[in-house]
Image (cartoon, rainbow, N blue to C red):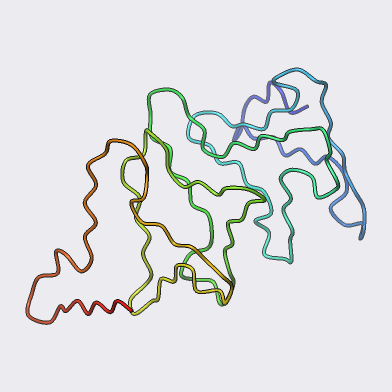
Length: 169
């Protein structure tokens, strides 16, 4: 479909399914091979999902009971030379919204190949850790075994108008 387009602007528009039938569903399903379904562009292209300025829910993975199966969803998983930038959440142009990262078990951010993790808010923002009105244990640099860990609180604040207020307890 749309293969071998020549002449003119060399473009081919392909629609699979209906774009005007309310409540319609289009299923694209591949086999069980590692590359069963691929959506990709040529060099420098863009793959867009749900970018049509209407109410969209984009579901990756199942919402049904999935007993006995493991789903792995990789976003920005590049194991070769190059740069991968992954943005989760929204840009400043949005009027509202909340970005939630959650896990049934342990939620891990970073690993052995990402030695620096920045958590930061916007100008005047608030970063809360463990402030959800339930019993929490917040561990900072509490790994067992031999390690050299420096915990810096309010460190590196310089300049006349910059201040670091630290409250413990």
